[in-house]
Amino acid sequence: MSPRALCLALLLLATASATKAEDDFDYSCIPGIVPTIGVILPRGDIHVETGSDPFDIYCRLNPAHEYARQHGAERLGLFLAGKDDEDDGPRRMQTRIVNATTVAGRYVPGADMRRDLVTCKVDVGGGSSAGVCQQNVFVGSK
Image (cartoon, rainbow, N blue to C red):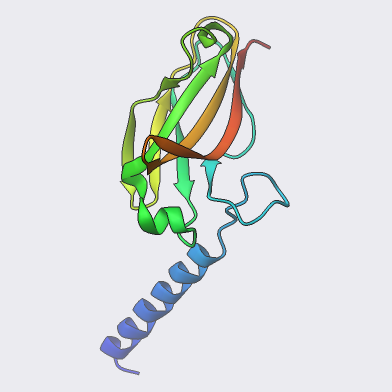
């Protein structure tokens, strides 16, 4: 096989593998409940120590879901609600678009112990939104 043909074969194999991996992604927000609009990553409740380094939280829409096809990442938002926020409601996190179906928000653990509920929502128009997924962030100490 010529070097050019080998290179083309490897490129096609890599593309097929990447496509297959995308199709196999588990978009279950809650294990066992499918199909869902999308997921929050990292999955599950997050436990961090007070004052630890900031980290990203991602909201990823299921590309097979109609909301991903109709609205995409431009209409996604991440929201935080903690015990201290009950009067003011959830705070919208500043996010950046990662790709057509994903946004990322930076979570900064504070110096105090707390629990925040992270909610991902997609704006479906007309002043309405649809919940994509929720999870807790627990900030504490060992």
